[in-house]
Amino acid sequence: MAAEPSAVTFDQGELRLIFGLYGRKVAGGEWRDYALDFLRDRAVFSIYRRSSEVPLYRVEKTPRLARKQGQYAAIAASGLILKRGADLARVLAALDRPLKIVR
Image 1 (tube, one colour):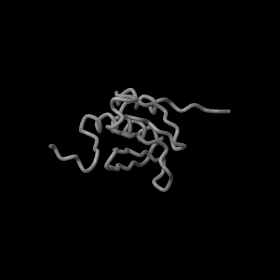
Image 2 (cartoon, rainbow, N blue to C red):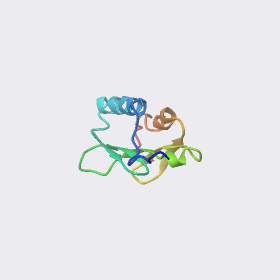
Image 3 (cartoon, rainbow, N blue to C red):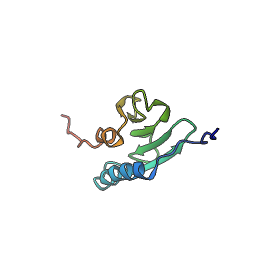
Image 4 (tube, rainbow, N blue to C red):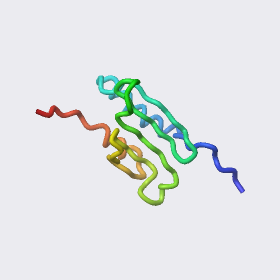
């Protein structure tokens, strides 16, 4: 019987996709900081505008949901799930939309 891992992590390919988006948003001045959390049931990449605030967005990997809704989710600060699925690139696309000016 294989030992269960102590924490869920992002692999190198997943981190490459996440940091690609993160780098573009930092260069555009939208995002400024991030945090990584590796928990027993999920891995979380939190995105901040300022490090003293709550995260603007969270990218979560929850392997137990892989056969249901998909193991990846993009979640807004309010807790609203913006996108969920099995393809990380498609989930991240929900965060890669340009900002709109609201009048």
